[in-house]
Image (tube, rainbow over all chains, first blue to last red; front, side, top):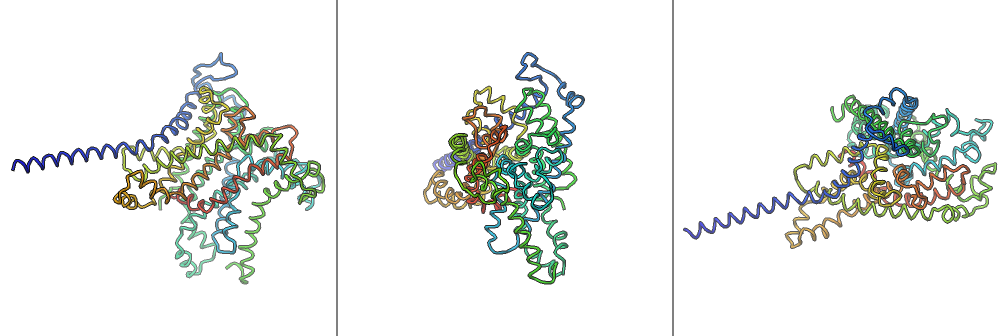
Amino acid sequence: MDLSSGVTETSIESKKTVKKKKINKGNLTPYLFILPSLILIIGFLFYPIGTVFYYSLQNYDIAAPFYNGFAGLDNFKTIFTEDKMFLPSLLNSLKWVVSEVGLQLVFGMIVALLLNQTFKLRGLVRAIAFIPWAISGVLASSMWSLIFNEHMGVLNDLLLKLGLVNEPQAFLAGTTTAFTAVILAEMWRGIPFFAITLLASLQSIPTELYEASKVDGASRWKTFIYVILPQLKNTIVLTTLLRVVWEFNNVDLLFNLTGGGPAHSTTTLTMYIADLAVHGSNFGYGSALTVVSFGILLIFAMIYLKLSRYEKE
Amino acid sequence: MLFNNKKVDKLLTMYLPITFMLCFTIFPLYWTVNTAFKPEGDIIKRPLQYLPAHPTIDNFVNAWTNIGFATFFKNSAIVGVTAVIVVLVCSTLSGYALARYQFKGKRAFMLMLLCTQFIPRAMMIIPLFIIFKNLGLISSPLSLIITYSAVEIPFTTILMSGFIANVPKELEEAAMIDGCNKLQSLRHVVFPLLLPGIVATGVFTFIYTWNEFLIALMLTNKQDKFTLPVGLSSMMGEFNVNYGALAAGSVIALIPAILLFAYAQKHLVNGMGGAVKG
């Protein structure tokens, strides 16, 4: 009796400690696993973003450190009342984002639909169509600068041959043509992003759906509008939002093809900030502009997700 | 069907648009390669040559040795390879934690990863410059390696946790019943199955580091520390642009990206689709 109870007691006790150990171990391991990632993310993503808000309330000019110190909302007041660059660059951002995302979405959709068909050499055609996705903004800039150039640019040569212009144009130096030129180059680079993501979700649409609409005698256009598009809705909403944020912040082509010129006609808000950061020294003011542009994006994202009723239906 | 004749229909709705799309995609690449092989004088000469009349590799030699593309290439490679290693180690560990463990704060961690995807990169250049200036790491490859890793880890963690979740847990347990310890079962059972995913993640990370411009521009101010994008950009910013060398430098920067992309592109549609859906 005594013996057996003793045995059960120790066995229960040992079971308890085993269980305890296991829980402890199970608790600690995942934290150890995420620790390196957590340190990098907090230290070099969240901390920098936090300091932007701090610097936006400071006079912080590395070229004039005597005046550095707390500035309250002065930087923001300057942005909204005195800065003559702010509103035009915000409008340019709007123009840039709407035309880029719109064009890339439409052409990306067309490419995805084309590549979703079966034809010979489809793998190769897909690989080629996606190449610009792997090409950097700087590289795209240098490639397109060889096309747009006034003296050696091939676009001028082609237009002259077709008789569409009488003399070579300096596309990147004209206030109206510069914007269009950069839009075209960025579109070239951006189409694959939509084509890839839309193609991925096209492939997840069950083939029965197509067949059913075929049996019902629907035209291709109707099949697209009523069958395919609703299936793609969530992907479109999400990728478009990601792309708006991305294009709003993207300056690689603007920076290298036009530098924001001529006469600031291609200076978007982010281009303005990048120019201040790279060539200027007033980091407090640059930070305040950054906070404003972040606020604009945040408000846009909230309204967009609300209006599009993401994931509902 | 849009057109009665089946052949005409296929031509107009499939082959013609596909041909047009391919031409539009390839044209800038073709023109860059074409320019890179032309001697200096031929580049501006009209009529323009659509194939180099006197092909030469002078531009490549000039770009590689005189302009410094050998250095830019080396800098980009060092930053890229190191960042890929850091990213793969960190994101495999954190991806494993997400896929295999339930723990307090898991949801918060996931939410944090998703939030980072909405942080504008351009927003970070001023604070990053200040941080690395205080650390004395401006123009050091370390500043780029750290930043690129931090930027990439959230997305690659989500990607890796998806890949790991696809490896059946039972396989791991079976290996442990057969006498493997945890580490051995990870090494001999999980790792080989994960390899394609790890390779794809590594390639995408490398392409990102190879292409990134604005952060590299902000954090580097010595020419011998330039990465390829910063080097190309500084060439384009010069008053008299040497277009032949610019084209050759572009081709040099292009080759590794295209080769890696060609290798990994079949993972792209699946990986991206998963990431967007999940």
